[in-house]
Length: 162
Image 1 (tube, helix red, strand yellow):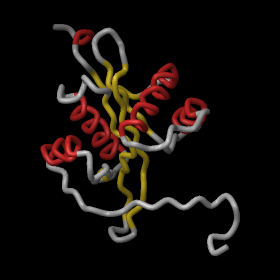
Image 2 (cartoon, one colour; image 1 turned 90 degrees about the vertical axis):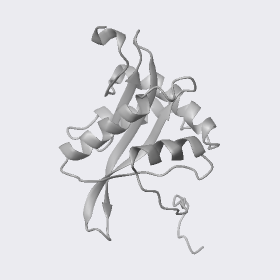
Image 3 (cartoon, helix red, strand yellow; image 1 turned 60 degrees about the vertical axis):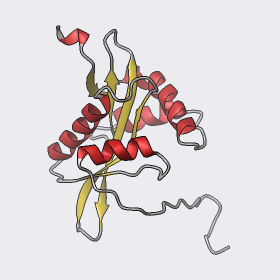
Image 4 (cartoon, helix red, strand yellow; image 1 turned 180 degrees about the vertical axis):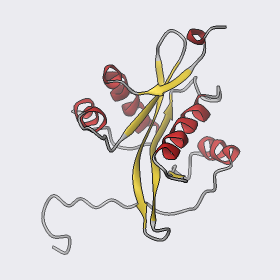
């Protein structure tokens, strides 16, 4: 079987942006979250491709025939306690029907390789506590989980204490 008949993971290209917008919307529904920004493709594209050294990286899972069925996005972050950077995998998503086929592990491998390329020795991420399938997958990879709550604070309207 030649390489064109094997699923593969590759860095995202600008031509993937419309598909990434669709997959991100599916991911938001799956995680019971609000939808992505209406101008997601433009904003994400600027972060991925609009700089000499992009802060954000994205890898896509592509099946034979060229259909993109999943993605992983990541960006460097800093750990105060460890006094070093790590690669934060913000999203990992595969469409229903494409899970359990090894594509998730290929995406995680691509993110881990990116961390090594950047001189980092750790990848961190989070998943909803109710996502038992993801938790089993990450456990099989040998990842260690820690329970935490994630907060977000809108800051557009003024001081927080108001």
